[in-house]
Amino acid sequence: MGDFFGLTIGVSSLFAQRQALEIAGNNIANANTDGYSRQRVNLVQSGGQVTPAIYARSTSTANGVMATTPQRMRDMFLEARSALEHGTETSLTTSKTLLGRVEGIFNEPSDTGLQAQISDFWAGWEDLANNPGDLASRSQLLQRATTLVNSFNQADADLSNLSTSSIEQLKTVATGMNTAADRLAELNGSILRATADGLSPNSLMDQRDLLVSQLGEAAGVTTTTHGDGTMDVFLGGTALVRGDTSSHVQVSIAPGTNVTNANQPGFGVGLTWVKDGYPATVTSGTAGGLLDGVNRLLPSYRQGIDGVAAQLSSVVNAQHNQGIDLNGNQPGTVTGANQAGITIAAGVNDQFKIDPGPPGAPTAITLSAGVYAANATDAATLKADLNAKIAAAFAPGAAPAQADVRVVNGQLQVAITSMTPGGSITAGTGAANDALASLGIANGATAATDSLFTFVPATGVMQVVITDPRMLAAATPGGGVLGGGNALSTSNLGTVTGGPDDTYRNFIIGLGVETQAANRRVDIQHSIVTQLDAQRDSSAGVSLDEEMANLMMYQRGYEAASRLITTVDGLLDTLIHGTGLVGR
Image (cartoon, rainbow, N blue to C red):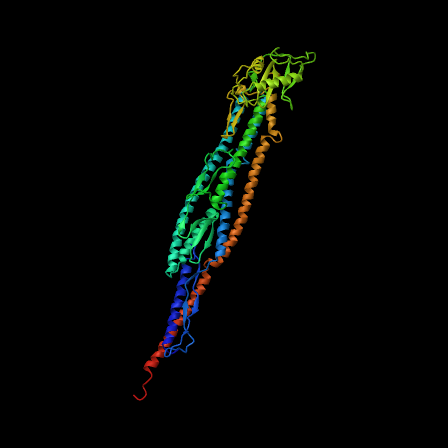
């Protein structure tokens, strides 16, 4: 040790301990830096001579120390799993957020929600049944109906706007993915050049891994690392980044898709590759959650609320059209000739049920002799013949699904209940046309437009048709215009099993159940991600306590190396200046 080789050992130790101190200090400085991976320097013994020389042989067994290239403390398996699990969490969180917004739209239970307004609507019919001649009660009912309709329309519009904003958010996510992919490809090129030049690419790799984590949260990507330090990133099995080359994605909407149409079975919204237009498979991440929202979740709830509106319109109109308004008219009917003594009413299983009238009335019934192929001499014959003639009087393919024939106040009435209010009848020729004429129905006659509601499923728009409160059909036929029987029957629709109220309650319950399930899935996934992050941080994260201990250890090593050099220097000084003095 008392020669110049001792200085070499001391110097190598100084360099090695200093580099270890620098790495420990860098770890401490970046303890709170997002994406930073803890680094470590491995100290290894310097190799001795392996080839002897005649006059250059060393008998020393000590060769000093050297520090290896700083190593990132990262578990690549945990990193790959982290990208997938974080993508799943963000997807579930996105769905949870959308469901929360849907719940906010309906705001149930509350005093201002649709359920409360539907109840007020039924209560309005009950008030009208108690005082059918009161115009104030009629006006109040129309106002409640208008408020209810506006709420249905607003809920549908809010869901449509939520779908549109989700698509815009998806476009922002796609743009961020493209930017991250470009930057990641650039970093791959820099890492490749640094590795080839013998430089440490650790900081570049940290930046790249942070971008991969962001892409994982955006779309749940997978990765493959190569021996040269580069990393390929895949989206649904297709390379988003390969080496120093990146690909871009875009939001595409299939031709003919109307994102505001709730009744379209599945929107054609997705991510496609810009280079060839092929679909990019995305099932997780923020993009996956948004795609599920605009293609499945939001349309299903728009269809659900439209179903409630359609059912409410149907049952209320059907009941309303069975009544008589203050003017003595029955909504939705086409009036025929006066045929006193004949009672014709809708049957349960038959399209028509015909009774001969009160006791003592003639049993043989004949309508306009010569019009029909054979005169109707009994109810069954008349039912079949009249049914065929009315059906034939419509244009091909436009025959009514249900027609109701009755006598109101001694007048025979034919109600074409499946005909669009305001729609025109196109009469046929020959016997069919004569059959309508015998009932007093002219070619081109129109159905009444005073059904209470109209609802167009294709647009999700609901309207109140009646504006004159006198046209509310509160009375029942034959009971006088001041009766309230039909209004009471309409009010009772709110308690019918399977009616609009039940449908809406089940709709809201379904929303609550799905939201609760989404919350649980997010909590479970968050627990998985938290545990995974803890495992990853135990490897890649910086522990200040550990680094402080390392600082003290390497500091002592540096001081000892300095002391070694001082000692060797003293020995050499004695050797050089303190020997050879004898005999002087």
